[in-house]
Structures are given as C-alpha cells and as structure tokens.
Image (cartoon, rainbow, N blue to C red; front, side, top):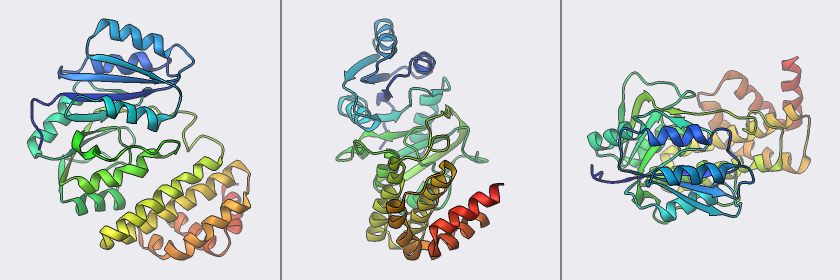
Length: 314
C-alpha cells in the first residue's frame, strides 16, 4: 500500500546522452515533490555524459552517480534498482524529460487509489477523457494486452518497489520492457491510469521504426512468446490477446526486413509456424485490415507477403 512519506527513487540509465542529459536532469531537479533521489547510472559512456552527471551531483545532494562498464540499458536499470532507497520507483530515459509535477502527479494517483502502479500519458498515447482505475491483476493484464490504455513501457509509470522483488530486466536483450512488464502487472492488485501528459518522449533515429533490420529485432518475438507462455499458464482467458501479440511481433519483423531490403531465410523459417499457431487469434483482434491481410498471406508464404507489401507502397 502506498505511503505518502515514501521517498521516490528515479532511475536513469545513461549511455552517450550528452546532447539531452542536461534537460532531462534539470526537469527532475525542478520537481514540485522534493523527497526524491535521482540515480544516474552511467553505463560506460564515452562522451561527456559522466562530466555532466558529476556537475549535478555537486549541486544537489539528491543526485547520485553510479558508473559501470557498458552492459546495456537493462543492466543499468538493474543497477539502479539494486541501489534504490525509496519505497517507490520510476524510470526515465536519458533523452526524455518530464513536467515539474510528474512525481507529484503520479504519487497523488497512487495515494488516491491505493494502487501498486500509476501511469501518466505521453505524446504517443491516446489521451483518456479522465483518469481510470483498473482493479485486479487479470483486468490489468487484459487492458495491457488488448488495448493501449496501459502503454508497453516501464517509463511514464511509478511502482511500489516490492513489485520488483525477484524481477530484473533481461541483460543483453532488446525490448527489455516487454520481458518484464507483464510480470509486474501480474503482481499488481490495481493500476491507476492518469489522463494527463506528464512525460515527454523523444523519438530517436535508433528506434525500431527508424533503423535498418538487424537480428536483435527478432527478440521482440522472443519477448512475446515468453509473455504468451506466462499468460496461457496463469490467465488462460487472456490467451487470445497474448497469441495475437506474437503474430503482431512477427509482422513487425517481416515488415522491417522488407523495408530494409533483406530476406533472412533462417529467421523467416522461425516465424512461419507462429502464423499457423496463433494467426486465427490475430484475425479476431482489432488490428488494421491491412495487418490482418498481411498475416493471412504470411501464413502461406512470408516471402510473398513481403513482396506484396512492397508493391503496395509503390
């Protein structure tokens, strides 16, 4: 249960973020709620990030710097969790920033609702007409899997620290949020979703949408399969939604291959059985007609689906 006296630990993984880091940290020092600690985890940066961090540590005792060899964002967040002293946890990416009342707003949502997790909106979410309380772990997972009410990122949210007992981010994996968020929601008795935009997300050139295809992008499928296995075992009524997300991930990978002008036979071979196993559930979902059409063709021939997709873009 939320306690108004709980300190909030803000964890920021940092790697070569000197262009945006100053704005990010300043937005935290300007918070209307003062009982916070800002944990900066410098993950082996080779630019001026560490120097920027140290300058803020000298100015404000609430800022702590931990430096480690480069091991990726998951390892950096895990380090932050291991050193967090607050009873509440929030994550912010180093190229993002938040409104001055970000922490106060999320904390108030927790206090008012008695929830385990509270969320705010950001530029890429569909803004709700009003805040809503989702009660019961199964309903929380239903909203997470079947709609965009609970956005699939760990940032933009505040958590009771106990939710992370025994749970850490997967080191060396991309799409790390997708590997653990369903497990956190499984532990939550309720989630409060605010309707105000308090988190500002900076889309960058290295995001999935903008980059060329690489084998690491296939890990989104691995994350969805892990989630599907968990859901099928504990919440079978939600299996349809988890199954559909496996196909959604497979579609993303095939489309990215097509856009990048590559066809990696071994990887495509891994995807084709997923359409046969879970394609029908994807067709029952609320994806676009074009996405459903693509999945139908991919079930027969992924290569043909990719070719038709490229032809439709001309």
